[in-house]
Length: 207
Image (cartoon, rainbow, N blue to C red; front, side):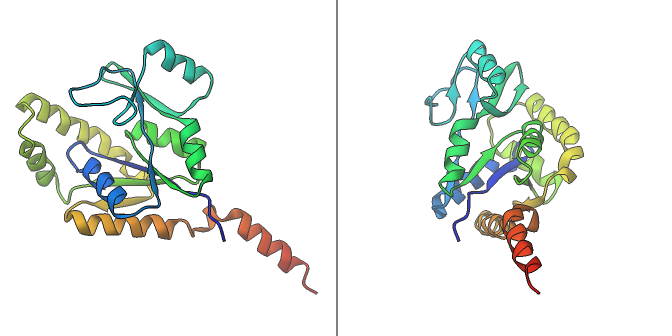
């Protein structure tokens, strides 16, 4: 039986290792496709258009919003971020599981438009560990670390809107668990409505 791909949204606090998890799951398994977000912010050193992000202007972004060409979008720190619809839908039709690594605001928009979406929330095992990881980067000031911790305090309110928690304690174990969760999720009744409908129709004909 050929399955359409599953749309998987990954969110979590800054410093939880979402990006690393996504890179590792893409490297280890070949059934995933990573959706590239579009943004109006300027590229950072080393970033390439079409690899890290699709970089665009405010005008072009707003045009896509009007044309319903994005499956989600959000404003963050004075810039737009969003997910182009065309690429995601084409990959799902090929049977690829499409991963979006996006903010919670965008994640809930996607779930509203695509109810079959699997929402995964990545968290460290404790707040203490979260702060330790932010400090371990060695690239952020005390002020930025404080801002990220305060943002986590706000974001925790959304955790129970997600389908599953992914606790990133041991990277390899976490990658395997995430892959297993995604595979198991494709068999839930709400993601197999057509199959259930067909079975019911055939059973109703029995005399």
